[in-house]
Image (tube, rainbow, N blue to C red; front, top):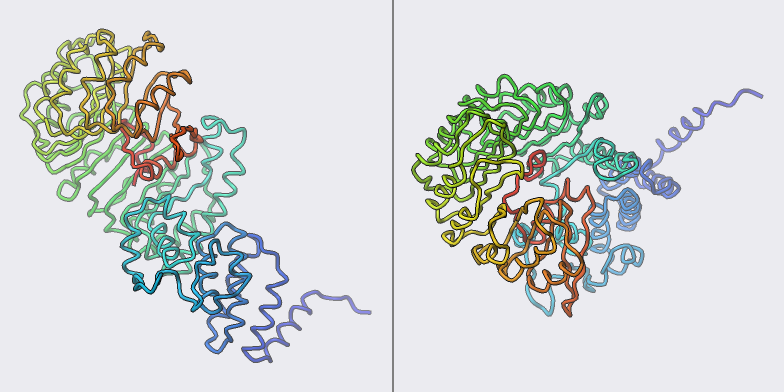
Amino acid sequence: MGVFNPKMLDASIRDVVSSLSNDQKTDVLLYAMALLPSNPSSRTIIENAVQSCLQISSVYPRKVIQARLLRAKARFATGLRGAAHQDLQAILLIDPNHSEARALMPQAGAMSAAGELTGNVNGQPRFSPELWREIATYLPRKDLKNLLFVPHALSSVASQLLFRKLHLQFGTGRFYASNDGLSDGSAIDKWHDQRSADILTRIVSDPNYACLVRTLVVSAPQREESVLTTFQIGMLANALPKLTNLKTFSCSMGTQTMASVLSTLEKTHPNLRDLRLVCTTDQSPPLPQLPQLTSFTYISSDLAPALKGYASDLVVTLRKISIHVSCVAPAGLISVNNLTTVDVTAIIEDTSFFTELLTNGHYLEILRIQCRLGGRCVPSKAFRNVAPLQALRSFVLNILSVPREFNDPDLFPSVANFVRQHPFLRGLGILKSHEVDRVNYDASIWGVLPTLGQLQSLSIYIPNDLALTLSTWLIPRTVTSLHMTTPPNQDTSLIAQAWPGLPPKIKFLSLTTQLTQEMQNSLLDKLQDLRLLRLQGSYHTVLRDEINMVEGESWPARRSRFYSQDWYEWLDCEEPGLMSAGLSYLHV
């Protein structure tokens, strides 16, 4: 007996199938696919096989249903619910009474007997897909995700709108495991690796979906070794040219990996409008030449040598700049003439840094400065000798630390005078660390608040000489997002004295003190519109039922880190002027 070669069986199958008609080949494919397990390892095989069946124009509807049903099951098994529901919708359009498709599709009973999607209720005219799309654009991402489960044209529209912003994660579970209280982030990373591979494959193979993408965020933080394999970098490089409508690219990576990705980006998207870079290693990354940028974010431990010239070269097009570094920001780093948004975190040693921003920022709408001050820096001179910035609508100043020799007793009085010149501010933050002295932050600073009749977002420090019972009555009644920092020696049992004066329309409240359950209950009774509570950095969603019973849902650490913006949007909350350095690249 000769030795059996398994390859002979494959060849025999191929020879037999080659002599069959297309209809018979379809039968063979469908039979073979039914034998495969519905798991991630076989999904790609099933996707390719089903696509081959559907491309045959003469295939019978019965076989189309069978092929789409197999693909829907495979997609469900890998978590691609939106794509799976598209297949189920197509099946129900062919056969509205298909029992298995109805069982897999939540609320499938909403399909009409004629097989049309619900939209023609009681004989009323159906909305067109274009109108549904326009309606869906006003929904937050969390609601769009819920719509994926609805057997309606909105499911397909929601899938397309969600694809406008993609966030791919590589190694974030292990990188943040200790900070997020995880013993091991490997399981999270494995899930995200598979998800990212599926998305990149879809982008490369489906131009219709690739053209939907407007924003791409890639989180691949590293310390020493890159978390991205050569294969993953190659997949990303192959996907970038397919994103023909990409407007915003944001990435968190090590220098070497970032250099490779930015080199591809520079060649494929020279007209990119928004670039956000977060370097997680010490060496600064190279900066790509993208002459059409209108918004630029740079977060790193050190300044890139070419950063000053880079911003100057973009002076015509650039409108928003955000720089977060741990080193000294030299004067002249930012050419502010045409900018509408400046967001800076750095060490500032020269008063001229403030002077240039406040003197030349004629078009500034948002100005946020979070800094450590040098001993010779005297910011009060800049704030005292400046004309009002007519366009300014949001202003934040947060002093993190000052050296022992620093002495500027007019600092916060001059800031209060500056704020008083801008009565139309909608966002304000006046903050300092507890250790910062000789800056004259006292109760008089709060005296500026009643002059701000349009204020909606406020972050502020409560000085020791301000009575808690009086403090909150000074806050404008228009405020809906509030962050209050209390001194470390403040008796936390007295903080409840501030509750009566809180603005009644607050939706987001952030406090740096922990509250007892009794204090939380009295606070929730006072603020009926409160939707989000932040205590010592921990977020809690406030849930109320039909009889106004309140329950708090604590946020997991990864929700706070990566998905807070989606939840702000869903809860209709605005972050109260807080500086989220290191995460601003996600807020797109």
